Amino acid sequence: MHRLLDLMAGNGISPNHHTFTIILCAYAKGGMIDEAMHIFHQMRQQGLSPDVVTYAAIDALCKLGKVDEAMLKFNQMINEGVTPNIVVFSSLVYGLCTVGKWEKAEELFSEMLNQGIHPNAMIFNTIMCNLCREGRVMKAQSLVDLMVRVGVKLDVISYNSLIVGYSLAGRMKEAMKLLDDMVRGGLKPDACSYNILLHGYCRAGRIDDAVRLFREMLRNEVKPGIVTYNIVLHGLFQSGKFSEAKELYLNMTKSGMQLDIYTYNIILNGLCKNNCVDEAFRIFQSLCFKDFQLDIITFNIMINVLLKSGRKEDVMDMFTAISAKGLGPDVVTYRLMIQNLIKEGLLEESDNLFSAMEKSGCIPDSFMLNSLVRRLLHRGDIMRAGAYLSKIDEMNFSLEAATTSLLISVFSREEYQHHAKSLPEKYHFLKEIKK
DNA sequence: TTAGGGTTAG
Image 1 (cartoon, rainbow, N blue to C red):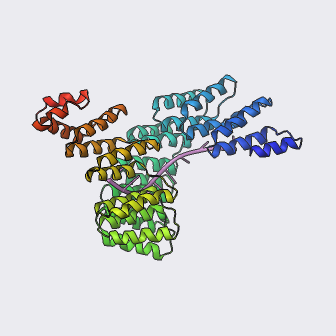
Image 2: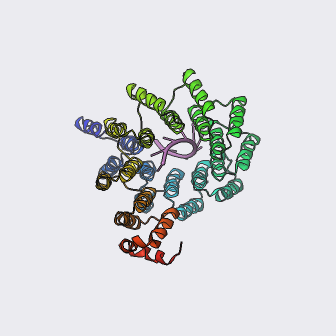
Image 3: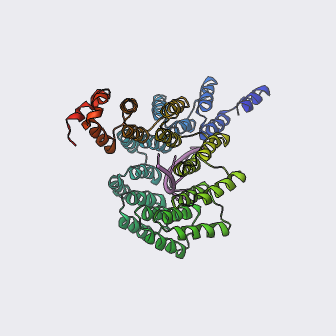
């Protein structure tokens, strides 16, 4: 796109405000923030004043999670006397909510109201959706009251956001009631509404209710999509309904439906968990043969089951295949591989793989470090466990309950007393706790 | 000129 500008310059055409805006927005939309900023500065150099539209850059920054930078741009905008509109406020509120800066989001929202900008359903939805995802459904519900007070009508997405909140909290009765409320409010629940509820039932282990709702969805002429089928398929496997799950999978295949990576990961995992490793392996190979774009989750599912069934060579092939497919191992892959090395007693190799992981830029998570500490403590390798414990501290993670109780039992055993002293100081108080 | 909701691995 820069070349386009060069081309114009070469032909003696100077880009106007509109040209710059289109290019900037295209960059911003594609997440190419540096390029967008470059256009932003170029506009200024040419004496064109970036207006509200130009601040699509703010939106791009928010989407990338660079909310502080977005706020700087916002303040700069105010200082230059540009009046922000609801789009800018929405972008910032979205950015602030997603990084958990709730107070700042609330402050900005109030500021918007004070400026006499009337909120729309979308900005409410942005806040409610994030609250619900965080499990703060009651706070989201209080926003519904505010919506009613200021005369903003809830739309399908408002309801769906709330349904997410109640479903996540396992409050399926209230979630289902919202479906009725929608209809009463003159809205038609869409496939997403049903998907959220189906997932809620499956998560709660209520597969029969999920299947019932799925039938109701069909009766109400809401067309299920691949996501719907994936949710139900996963639910059937999770609740141990193996033959029903397989039957559904076969029907999906036969009906010519376009299966996606989720479907395959669900079926591979389902087969693996039900001792059908060979069948899973065959499907995996046929996907590779068809050049279907797999993801790291596919590999993790396969590596996990191959490790459990002791197929070491297949594991190594699988690990190598990850990069051959243009992917990279993630924290789960490394954890599985390292756990296995520890299990085999190949401790130096496990250290090496951990270093390789860090070198590759893959950051260990709390789950990984806790489980490595436990495995090492079980083996009586207190020194190595101590090194990972220090990492947990460095990264400000906490010990899981299982890790703490294992530490207590290590301290209580005579033969480990000496080594236990080498653990980080902050854990020495555990010596006082009796098993 | 811009913006919100649903699925998979440990």
